[in-house]
Image 1 (cartoon, rainbow, N blue to C red):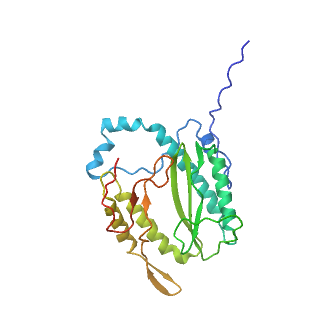
Image 2 (cartoon, rainbow, N blue to C red):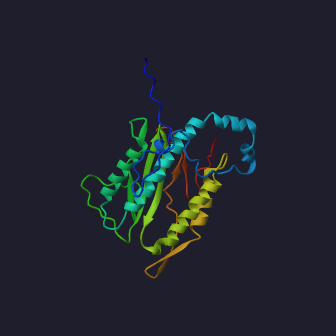
Image 3 (cartoon, rainbow, N blue to C red):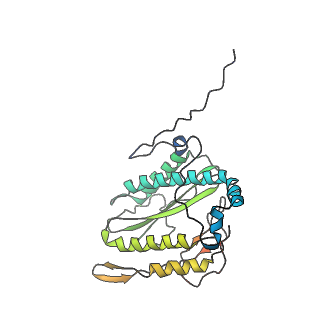
Length: 256
């Protein structure tokens, strides 16, 4: 008598906390991952939301969407884990290694199909971006530090590139509020046929409406002129376009 094939277990598992140990694909065994926040089309593009032809075309990309959503769910879970670990007195290199190992575990890393998209950045204070500790580095996280943790995941080259700000001293709350407001403004202003320079102008206007007081001195909040957003291609973190965060930049339009 022939033995039948063993059926794949499709029972969803629950994540473990405070340390997540269950790969995301095992929580969503049907391959349908959380959709997340959806930005609706605006203005002349609003018709795309209900147009039958556009909706059918979008269905053709469903496999790509699920790859992106899996990477995003891994990123969200790993971020929450890191936020619980990152405390004053911790070595930055230890935090980066624990984070990257956790991403590999949650995404079931298998080079080159899935895994970490790039080395973790953990830029502190005046360092805006793209600093990562080398082996043996002894930099320690301090109470008054502001850290920009920047890490990426990918599934079949569909990269999630996202960063967040981590700090402990509440005096930085207004600075964090300015960045959050400006980021949400950039997301809201983005869309098909929008000029990149217009996104930058909107971000700058919001950012510069804030100020922060540190040790009794008031500072205006300003965007970093040469720190840009960018589009992402398959297996390419920085693709062909840069998105400024100040006015007067590239007049190239966003495309579908």
